[in-house]
Image 1: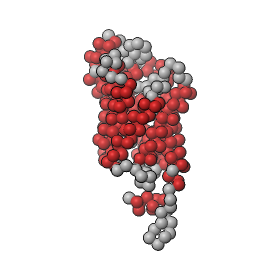
Image 2: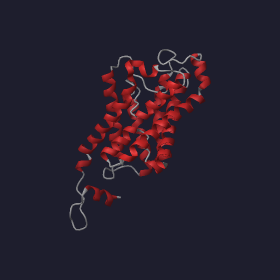
Image 3: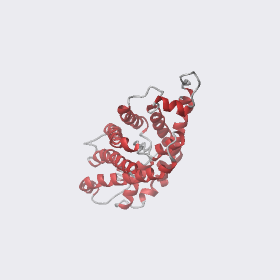
Image 4: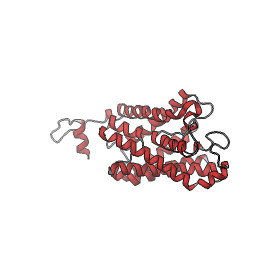
Length: 269
């Protein structure tokens, strides 16, 4: 329960800061925000959320990351469900906090009529929607690539044998990774790369006035930021392990005998 609470709290913080900067940018008509500000703030949101929760839960804050850690790093499968539920709930609550804070600004922007898309559409403040030119397949590829990059770097940053940063700086580099993904791959579909980050706020908009259109818009786009990041997480984690982790020099014990991978990892710790 304590780990689930940490995931809930960390994910809620992530959404409050990340969705908050999008709300400020959109509702001010761009006068108090920009794409650069959005990318920077999402990176900072990750850093702050990880620092807030890593000591208790490891700060996954992302079901795709939790899945990759279960498949490739021995994270207990029994904890996957509670982590994912906590992350989804945290994202929902984080979206609610932003909405309550900016409620009057929403009214000033759209006159109280909540619209999903269009000139006065505000659902995109909370969840991601694809660019007009993007096909569903193209969006799926976009989310696979973005999440693969994220998980590959998470694995690299946490790899004890690959010159990782000091543990206290790891959240900074994860945040910089998210910032880089946003700057390089944000145009197609807003770089959700996190099922909780997208679905929790989307579910909030469905019950807070935007209605079922948040699930039918863009040819029923809603499932892509859920499934594709999970695929991308597995691809990125596996690619890192095959290209880097599998080729670390062997470690020997004091009498020169090779150690098994698990024993070697314990020795490094």
